[in-house]
Image (tube, protein in one colour):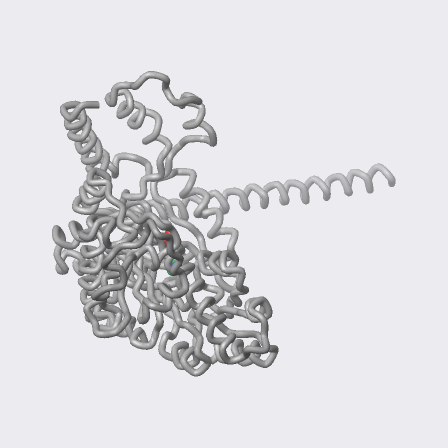
Length: 508
Ligand code: PLP
């Protein structure tokens, strides 16, 4: 493809994206395809000869789009948002266009240095403790990982290696394998599945401690678990707390957890994958309580900061603990500025060697929206969730299950779990909006999450009309079915009386 054709292809693709995003409300958020429908429409081998890009865009439009769930639709109300914006989409395009990797400073100095800059910008914007900034005196700093899962895994692995080294020093009589066999970590039973997975990958059991009735993990529960483990000869390593659990967006009590972790020299990591967006708002300053005492923290920019997937910010109070744990060298990776003037080689802060130039899309997003635009976005989602909650509260057939938190409302139709399941089933069959269920203490509920690039109050009304009308339909169907069952029962009873009477008459 020559540059003229590349230009044409590029312009057509931007048009394609704009048409897609500007008409996204016209599509059902869920696709109507059955398994293998997309697969069966596609050739089974790479085309031998190059095809024209117009053919490719045509198939994207006609085969691929009908098989997509539309994550950027305002009617996508499942999971948490995977946000995006014009600036970040262009940023992603430029990243691919420039095509650099930045695993060490020399690989692309601007790639590393821009990441240092945007991570410090973000730490200030979110009002995080100063020691998380690269610019601070100490060994702290931030790095962009691909996902919260990777950030958690990095924290778990680094904490594990630190624990092994320090336990070996204090207990030279124990072999390394004996020490490794005794390690244990903690999180809440409300934490994301990626925490449990990190434990599996790190070959370290993670105890999922019972959160309170209010879905919150507190220091006293952690203290009891640690004391029990220490008494049994186990070695507590790390606690992964959550600010904004996946089910109900509950906030673990970081202050009481940090006190316990400090006492027992346990690493405290905070997974704020979604709720980290709230740190930016003065009115949510409570959320930041205790963060000055945590060892590491992650927040997904792709959830709440209008940077498209994948982009997960992670901060470390002492980056050396990660660098020392993961530092593996080869002669071809060396350069003359290594370790100088605190310029990081980010390959030591992450799992892969290669690393994307994600800082570019973050930089473009932040500059094109400004701090004000980012704060407005978070505030808008909170407002829209409040609008949705008001609609739920006004309808006596529904109940709220957990306090509204940021852009999430947890609610259910009154009654047993079956009615919640049936309602969701009807809604999913119609494909107009997309929500998922969650469960706590045996009670199922629906999660309504404000998502989308430019969600408006009318979109919330649309979603609510869909939900409440489907409940009306479901209740009417149930009433009809029970009336029919009642009629059949009446008829059967009537029939039985006659039969019995007949039999009596016959036998007489
Ligand atoms: N942590 C929490 C609280 C989440 O809600 C999620 C996903 O929704 C994750 C972690 C996993 O995020 P990622 O897909 O970036 O690994």
